[in-house]
Length: 237
Length: 269
Image (cartoon, rainbow over all chains, first blue to last red; front, side, top):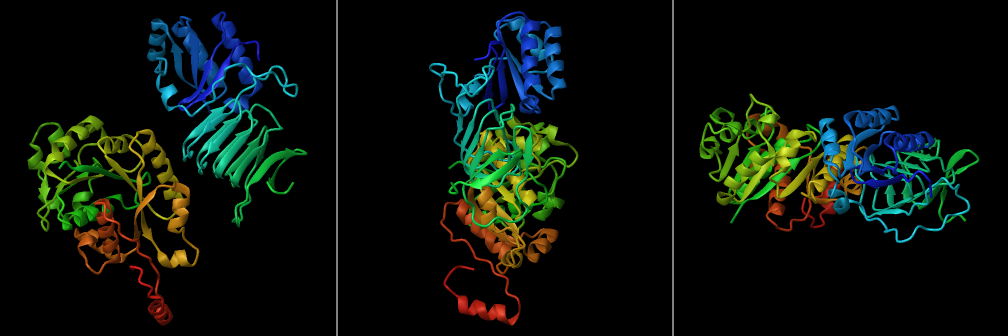
């Protein structure tokens, strides 16, 4: 586990980032380090900041917003139990309350009873995240972000987007845009029963599906091999 | 009996929402149902023209909401069917004149005396759309068999689900059987492959729709119109009847007509 105490979770409204304890400017600096480490993952994301019991001034909140804007991240909420802080967030046009809706509408997520043992392949700074399972079709305009791996039981339609720190598995047709290993993991894979994404990214690599109309869809796995994304039929091993 | 509120929407403009609302409204009234067609496209009023009732408008939806007239005064009785009413939109105002709660209240007032309230939604996914789906018991999405319309319909299906008004049902409008046969147009199955929602009707491209729309006499009245038949079938499906889907073929020249004779396989065409 990382030492900065930052927890990043995906929710239906966007990412919810819980900052570590300690002074505000330190916590914010720690978060900036995360942004610098994996800008691709955060680019274009909507982030709600859970600041814990802290009391933020308007200047503090503005600093957070301006920081995120530099990384092309929208700060849509400041989540705090403190009334004064909620007031500040509302004044800046952000959501303020603790989102109860999140627990209700959020995709099914495996509970974390005990932290899983750290795996030797992963560098120690990486959080070991459990996967996120989504049992519905992602439609045009819908976006899913998660720091771990993502499994979708359903289709990913054109115009939908998945950004995952780990692997992306689609038990269905993948036709939207997908980014696996968005925090830089080149070993990440993307697989689908019908792999025909508008655009497929793994770490910093980008590929498009062939333009020609596909014949019969077969399950495929995409991965990075010698610096290029290649898709292989699932049976061919 | 209390009325069922059905909102007809699409995302993309120009796919045939208003034509569908008018024709399904007429077809339901032809089945003896008490129907109100409500124009939700405030500021871009059209439904009255398609129904041929434009010259009878005195009050509109916004007048009712702002208390300048009674609901009954704004409702226009159709010139052909005694159980079909139009509630026209205002042409002078914009979407901000009607809030979702206003439309909900209005529909509550209409429910006791009718069987169906059809709301013709504005295009887009903004205020007009949000207001139009607020009172809906059911949402029907109209799309054309083309990639851009289907993409927008998919976005709307997601928004309707998120608003807990789902699952929406689908009408594929302006299908050109000839183009589909040659592989130059998306087929209904291609559309359903993406959207994966229940189909409630397929309406073929038909010149009689354009002509009847311009004359303010919906094609659903026309016994001979192919599209009119499709709209009447949609109305029957809305009432819960199980109506088999038409199969459309383009008959070109002698061979087409001849092969059709040979292919008479009992499927309703």
